[in-house]
Image 1 (tube, rainbow, N blue to C red):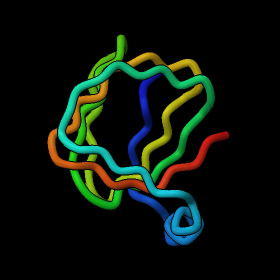
Image 2: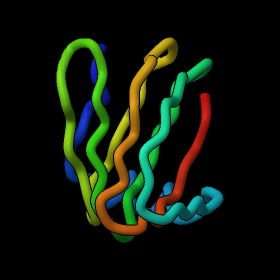
Image 3: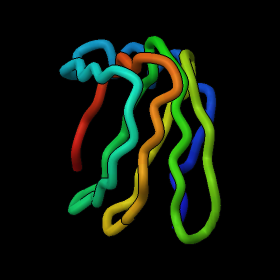
Image 4: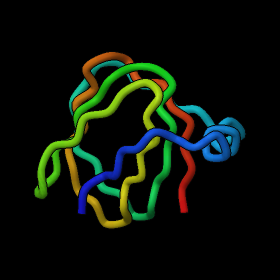
Length: 86
């Protein structure tokens, strides 16, 4: 169970624009997803380390984090993203 990183379709991009925004500076922290999260990365770069491997993503990527994922975020460049749970 790893995050899935793709490039968004025009429809996904448009839908994501109505979601809230989250920002965080360079840092490393553990995280656990108690529900699925979908996000569109607007700025920055991050690496997420999980038992199944490491996933990198950055500006322009569409990322889906599965419910139940336990991972460590390493933000390389300040992240700004639209996000949606469920």
